[in-house]
Image 1 (cartoon, helix red, strand yellow):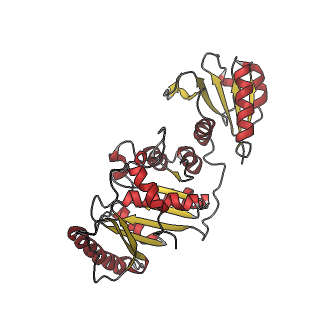
Image 2 (cartoon, rainbow, N blue to C red):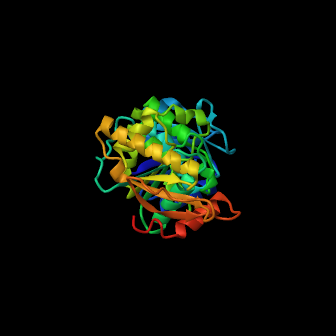
Image 3 (cartoon, rainbow, N blue to C red):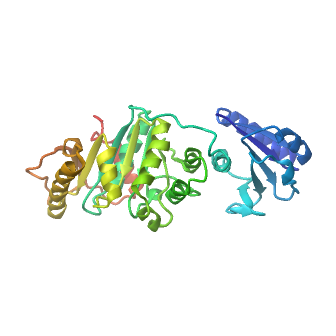
Length: 353
């Protein structure tokens, strides 16, 4: 499906460059048209359904001549402006990819009942990484795994559902939309959810697609089992990712139990090899066994241990445990989270997956 994006601006040079660039780089996703006179735009869109019209903020608009089915926004000079004249605002000067996200976001408002999502396929591999011990480096491992698979040419989605996640520590992001926007869209159900979420999606230079972590940590605590189901079944599975990496705090909340019981192909349980970490992992495995009985699911059979940030002098592995060990990652020296992630992505611990 291609979106029809119609731009109206007095600056003909800007319009020419904009339309040429959009049609060259986004031809499979949208068809861009431009007009310097709004009267020609009115005539063009009068018989069109499901288009987006974006008009320079300084040009008067006769909304009576724009069909109800057409989404509308103002083209503004300044970035960071959310609304103009009661309508959504889109900045003129931004990356083409970001402009497309804004167009898709605007288009989704009027496309709620017009498009159906494809059914879930059986090709996705879903990996949940978690730990009962804070500071075990779960996010670093999860991002390294996602990056490794993306660089192998796989289509990868990384979902950070930590209570206090920070994707900016691992990916080169300019956050405009985040998981907070995802949850608001899912809960409000006022637009085409799949299109809305597509407009919030980030693409890192490594090839990993992801949603930026919540702007306000309170938002992630509002995520329910129904929200997870909507995100997974109406968007993530419809995108036909080959690898889906979920990074989530271990907890007894129902939403965590729903994720851990319903979705993973494999579960990676992370310990730092310390006495405290290993003790908590043992208790976590006991909880998994109890959850298996309560939810009639297989958790122990899907779980593998990863020892992260290991020190040869003091840390050790669990001698007796009911799950296999995937491997261990040694402690790194002074480095940023991104640098450590990049180094782990080069290691062989995830080669067999």
